[in-house]
Amino acid sequence: MRASVRRQIRLPLPAKRVWELVGDPSRLPEWFDGIVSATVEGSSRTIVTGGGIAMPEQIVTNDSLQRRFQYRITSPLMREHLSTIDVIDLDDSTSLVSYSADADPASMALVIAGAAGAALRNLCSVLEGNQMEPSA
Image (cartoon, rainbow, N blue to C red; front, side, top):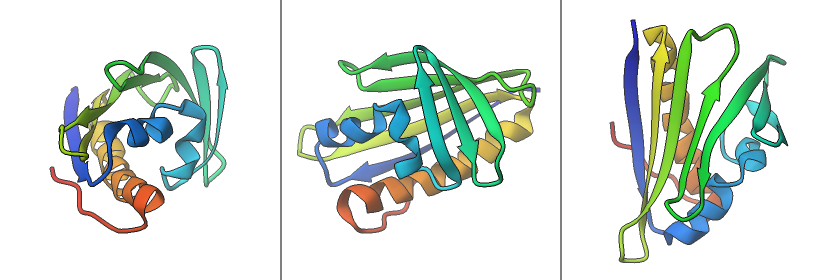
């Protein structure tokens, strides 16, 4: 069974500044706890977790105009997966960052969403040095 989960956070920062970090697929370890490295070659990215597990991914979209990044985990852990990160300009020098995960098996969407919620809080810390709670 497939599941879809989304986490989001409003940041007191311009979307352009947030996108500079989020839109660079090699910089994921800077803001996503539990990921120690990210190697990008063309449209492929391989992340390595703190536990030493290498996870191959396919970069589907990296659109700096829309500020949208999408990737698929291509590891055998997933039958199907697509995660989308959107950085939305709220026109008041703030931005909304949305991280959604669609996955089969459904349990993996929940795992990714839990990690994404923590990553969004950490993103705020990295960019501004304070903690904010993501909304479900």
